[in-house]
Amino acid sequence: MSSFTGSTKKPDDMYRIIEHFALGKRRLELFGEDHNIRPGWLTLGKDLSYSNFNKEAYNKNFADSDGKVWQGGGGRNPPPGAPHLIVTTDSICANGGRPLHGAR
Image (cartoon, one colour):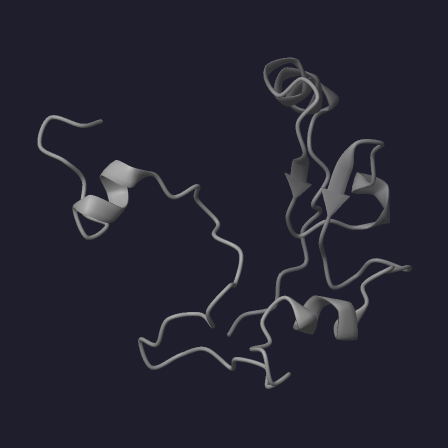
């Protein structure tokens, strides 16, 4: 794997455009560094000087009723009761998760 040595700095105009279209919503900055941190944004990156990440609290989101943490992989489903990334609707459940014909 090659080493990346460039900057992650983005133009301020890009942030303003995103903030204009995502009023009051969470915003995610991937591969961030300290200079990318902005109010109202979640910044993720390996070179941040500070993190409030709590591994135990995070892992609880993936634990079953016995406290065993789901490790993922192998095509297995998340544990029962795990939060959905996409809201489940009756039409999605009725069709086995496949899009309905004509749905966009």
